[in-house]
Image (cartoon, rainbow, N blue to C red; front, side, top):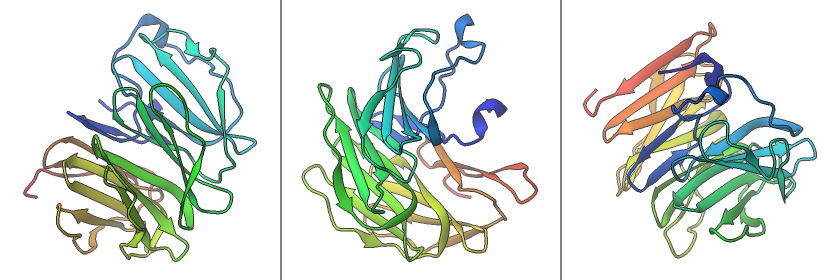
Length: 265
C-alpha cells in the first residue's frame, strides 16, 4: 500500500532472493513507537539513501550541509534506538555534490556511490567489519548515480553524463569495466531496477519531459523506448516479481501516475 507521507523524495525497493535494488523505504512492520515522527538529527542536503540488508536492519546515508557523507543505522523493531545515537551520525567523509545511493549485495555488505566535487563517481563499501575509503570510478556526471546489485558479485551503475547521455559501468565480481554510453538525451538522473539475473531496466526523463526506457537482456541493450507522458521529476521504478515492472511519476499536473508491465504488455 502506498503511503503519501513516504512518496515524496524517496525511491522504492525491489527484493527477491539474492537481489537488492535501489533504495529501501520504511518497512511495513509497525510498532506503537513508530506511529509518530521521530527527529533523527543531522543537517542534511537532498534526500536520504536508505537500505535494508537483513530483517530489522536499516541503514541511512545522507549528504551533510558540509557536503560530507553521514551514516546511521537501526537494528531491531521500529522504535529501537539508532546508532551511533538517536540524533547522531557516523561521518564517512568525502566532498559530494549528489545524494548518496546505496545497494546491498548480501548480508552485512553495503556499496555506496556518490558524485564528488570534481563530478566523478566515487565508491565506498562496508564489508561487515569496516568502511573503505572513498575511491574514484571516474566519469563526469550531473545528478545522482543509480546503482543495482542483481547478484552477489555484480554491480551496475548509471549516471547522466555532462553530455546528457546515460552512461553505464559494471563490476563483474573481479574488476570494473569501462564506462559506456547508452545514448539518450535526459534530464535529472536515470533510475535502474532489476527483476532477475542479467536483466536491467533503466528509466530516464527525456529533454521533452517524457519517460524513456532502455533494457539489458543479458546479451545486448535495446534501443530507447518512449513511454510518453509529461513528468516533472525522475521516474521511480519498482519490480515485485520476474517480468513485473511498475513505474511511478509526478505528472505535469502534480498528480501521481502509474504504468505497469506484466511480461507481455
